[in-house]
Length: 145
Image 1 (cartoon, rainbow, N blue to C red):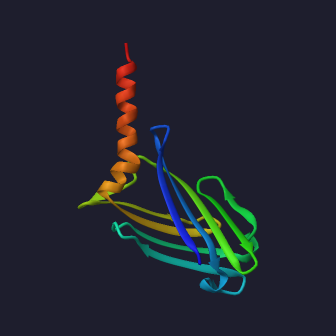
Image 2: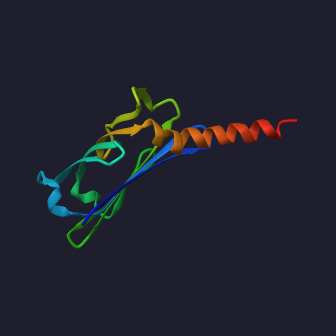
């Protein structure tokens, strides 16, 4: 049974790191396009956060670091199971507020090419990002002399 984990956190009060990890996904969930695979993923959790992710990647990228800059992509295969990890650094202003949600929408025309859309409820975004930024601001203010 595969698991999908997404983690979002502030980095140095300047960036947001978004890490998507898909572990032990059955290879049969991939669309075989000859020398490439297509992965499409749509998930929604109980709190209303939604993830829409698609990636087109060459089969040769399996068991190699597919990309080592921003974004970082690693695809591994163990028997018939595929694991994928994508790490993206985003600008603090990139998540857009819409009603009671924050959206991150990005397309990467890289190798491998992918697009990600992540919708977070406001409470989750506050807890994961804004609260940490506010704590940092408060501690910086209190140390100024």
